[in-house]
Length: 147
Image (cartoon, rainbow, N blue to C red; front, side, top):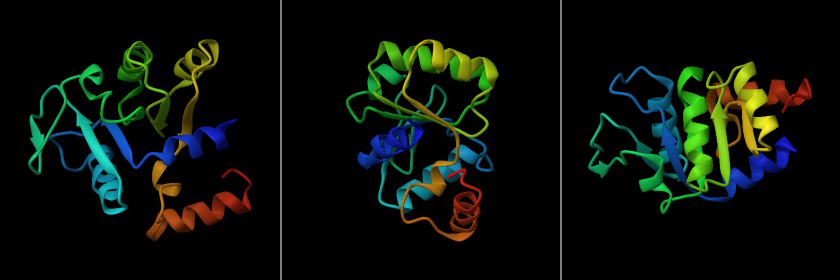
């Protein structure tokens, strides 16, 4: 069930993130900053960025598995399927596809391969403390029974 997958993912305060960009306006960068502010330790996997604020980035998912079994993917759907396959090969147990990282083909792939993944949800509505417009959006989602 999706709710259990969300709880399992958030149990660890350590997360591996794919989707941080050299472009500071990308949502992966915003998520990185927000999760750090909320007390999470976020390790970034990037082939093009060596370090962020003095923290070394990992070049692939294999090299980051010792940090956490929780993987947050904030990429375009074209990249997501390959990342899911790599995540499975490297034994990531908890996977979250940030809204926009998935499409119908990827959701079908998740179901077909029985991958326990969160998708169609924004992590910032669930990672406490939830604040600003994410708190408002969470309230609306609860009212609409989509939370």
